[in-house]
Image 1 (cartoon, rainbow, N blue to C red):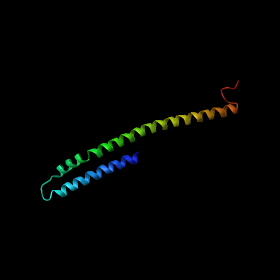
Image 2: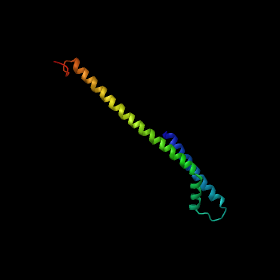
Image 3: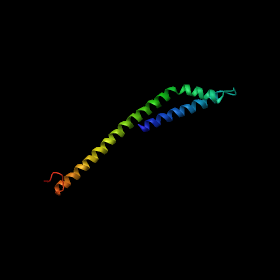
Image 4: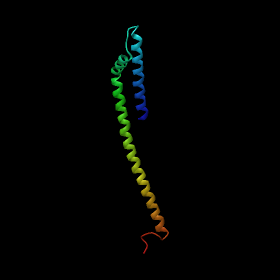
Length: 99
């Protein structure tokens, strides 16, 4: 998902730069300001910006799920370790179940 997010960002940025460059080249001596070219490029890359935002949202949503699952895994691992330690103590006669 990170790769897809980065790919969409690259596509948007490259289209934006290409659009600005083309507009400045097409001006053929007419005074077209860089600001006007950038505004035109902003308009032309609206779809790509939306795609990039959606991809970024998917990435962060997946990251939240991943981190939550990773926390559960860490907790389970710690619990298993504690149970193994208790079992070792029981076998050696030092556990809490001894009378």
